[in-house]
Length: 215
Image 1 (cartoon, rainbow, N blue to C red):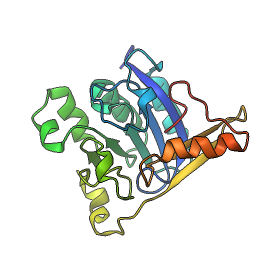
Image 2 (image 1 turned 45 degrees about the vertical axis):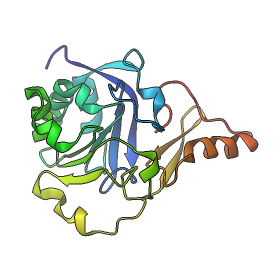
Image 3 (image 1 turned 180 degrees about the horizontal axis):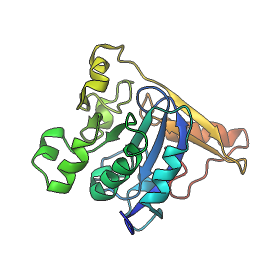
Image 4 (image 1 turned 30 degrees about the vertical axis):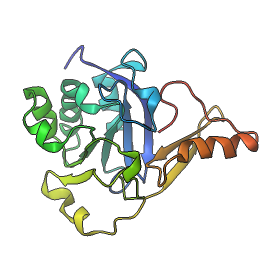
């Protein structure tokens, strides 16, 4: 794993609205897809973000108390599958019960037919949210942006998710150490980000707009 790196847009050490329980979140940088209305457009270019050694990210995750796993978002996690698979192996060598969830604009069936490195990452996940975001199909669902996306349980750890209430988990606002605001979660309605920024601006608050500061 020495020398393996990951291009990251943003990290968050605690989040309760992007998957089961309390989780860390890593937003990777770069996505080959261009879903119309993407709420994280700043994570799409591959030339943005910050490069981190996988070992460094693994040590960070292992040192976080009170979280049950990590959610991988972006960007497109399956655009950097080898680094993410190495990251999960590194963490689970020290925390075997650590769970992993990922968002992908690719369908589960397409990932199954994909390159070996994508299959390797898929095999390390407990839960997948699959499919592209479709603004016209946004209905305030739990952990998903639009109704075409699915929650796919890949291990026995989260088989109950298909039977639980399917309503929005909401969003979380975070005040950063430097006093800036950021947010995480799946917006319950189209245009949420723009509306939030306008309301905050009217009160004198501005969300950072550089790569990776918003969910």
